[in-house]
Amino acid sequence: MSLLSIQNLSQSFDGKPILDGLTMDFWEGHIHAVVGPNGAGKSTLANTIMGLHGYTNYGGEIFFDGQSLRGVSVDARARMGITLAWQEPARFEGLSVLRFVGAGSKRKDPAHVKGLLEALGLEGERYLHRSVDRTLSGGERKRIELASILAMEPRLILMDEPDSGIDVAALDYIFTALSRLKNQGATVIMITHSRAVLEQADHAFLMCNGRLREKGEISKIGRYFIDRCIPCDHINEPDEEESIL
Amino acid sequence: MSSSDLVAALLQSIGVDNPHGLSDNTARIEVHENRVVGLKLVPGLKVDADETDDGINVEIRVEAGVRLQKPVHICFGVLPEDGWQHIDLDVRIHQDAHASFLAHCTFPNAVDVRHTMTAGIEVEPGAHYAYFERHVHGTHGGITVIPEARVIVHDDAEFTTEFELIKGRAGQIKFDYETLCHDRSVVEMTARISGRADDRIEIHERAQLLGDEAKAALISHIALRDDARAEIYNDVTAYGARARGHVDCKEIVLDRAIAKAVPMVAVHNPTAHVTHEAAIGSVDSRQLQTLLSRGLTEDEATDLIIEGLLSKKARWTKD
Image (cartoon, rainbow over all chains, first blue to last red; front, side, top):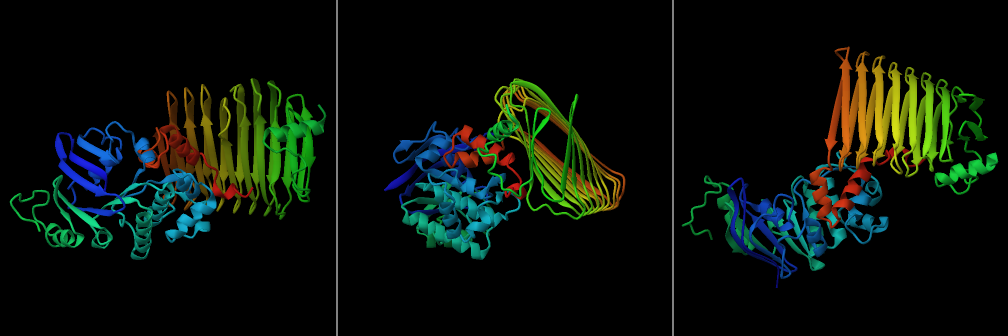
C-alpha cells in the first residue's frame, strides 16, 4: 500500500524547472532509494515533500496517507509523521544532545535518549550533555540527528545522503537504524549516490534532469547508475530515446 | 524583618527554600540592600564589610596557596519594590590560591530598584578566580543594574566570569569591565542575557593583553524580543608576544528588537593573534527548519534555539 503518492510534481526556481512532472509511489514499510546525478532534483524532491521554506510552491500533488499536503506547514507535516534527515545536519550551539534528541519525542528522559544513542554506536553518558556544535564531528552529528529521528517514531523518513561524512564503521550503525525503522513499520526514502546505501533499499528510482527515468529493482537501477550515470558525459541532458535498462 | 528572616527570604527568591540547605563547610555572604545579613567563612577566606552612607564596602581575600574546595555562595538582593544597593567590592586572590564564587543577585519585586557595583579585582600570580553571577529579576523591568570592574590578572593567573540573566526582565543593564592581562594569564568573560519589552542592555568589555602569551576571550550571547535593545562593545587589544584573543558576539533578535555589536580588535605585536566573530539576526533558518521537521511549533523551536544560545557553560554545571 502506498503511504506517499506523488502525482505530476513540478518545482522550479527562477524559472528553471528542477522537478518536471514526477509521479512516484512509496510503499508503506519499505525502504526506497532515489538515485541520480548531481542536479537531478533529488534533494529538491525531499525538501518539497517535507515542505521546507521556499519549497511550498509546487505544481501537481503530494498525498500522504491519502491526504494532500498542499498548504500543510513543516511542523504539521512532522506531526503527521514525516521528517527529514539533512545531508549536513545543523549545529546547535549550547543545546545539549539530550535536549535535541528529546525535542520531537514524547519520551525525553535521559535513559531513553541514552538508549537511542547507544543503538547508533555512541556512548550515551559521554554524549548526553555535550552540545550539538562544532565540537562534534560530522559523523557524530549525523548519528545524533538520526537518534532524534528514531526518537520521534516517524512514519516517513526522508534521508538526504545518509552516508555523507560517515566513516565505514559508523555506516553499519546507520544501516542498523534503517532496519530498526523498517521493523517499526516506517517508510524510508533515501537520497543517495552510494552503492552501499542503495543496497539497503527494497526499491529504487532513477532521476535525471528533474524527471523520473526508471524505477524498479535495486540491482538493475544500481548497475545502470554506476555504469552509465556516473561516467555520463551529458549529465542532466538525458537522451530521451535511449532505453535505460 | 530580622537578619535571619531576610536571609531566608533572599534565598527563597532564588529557589533555595532552606537557608541551612547549604552544607556547613560552604562559605556564604548575604547582603540585603546595603546591609550584611548573613556571613559564614571557611579557613583561608576573609571577608570584611563596612556599611557606609553610600552603600557597603566589601573586602574579600583568599589567602596565598589556599584552594577553596567549594564555591563561595554570595547573595546580593533588594526584596522591596523600590530601593537601592551599592557595593564597593575589593577582591584579592593571593598568590597560587584557587577560588570560585557562585553569586545570585536577586531583585524579584523590583519596580524602582537600582543596583550598582564598583569592583577592583586582583588575581595574583598563579591564582585562579572564577565568578559566576546569576541575576534573578521580576517581571516589572523596574531594575537598573550597573556593575563596573577593573581586573588585574597577574602572571600565570586565571580569571573567568560569567553573567547570566535569562529569567525575568533585564530592565536597564549597563556594565563595564576592564581586564589587564599579564604574562601567560588566561581571561574569559561571558555574558548571557535575555531582554524583552523595553529592556535596555549595554555591555562594554575590554581586555588588554599586556603580557607575553596572555589569552582572553570575550563572549556575549544575547536574545532580544519585543522592543528590547542591546549594544555590545567588546574590545581586545594585544601587546604581548604570542598573545591570543577572541571576541564572540551572537545576538538573536525577534519582533521589533534592535541589536548592535561592535567587536574591536587590535594587535600591537606581530606575533600576537586576535580574532572576532559577530552574528546578529533572527534564529538560524537551518536550525529552525530542523526543529520544525521534528514537530515543534515555530515558537517552541525558537525557544529551544534561544535556550541553547543562552545556556550555561559546561564548566559551571557542577556548581
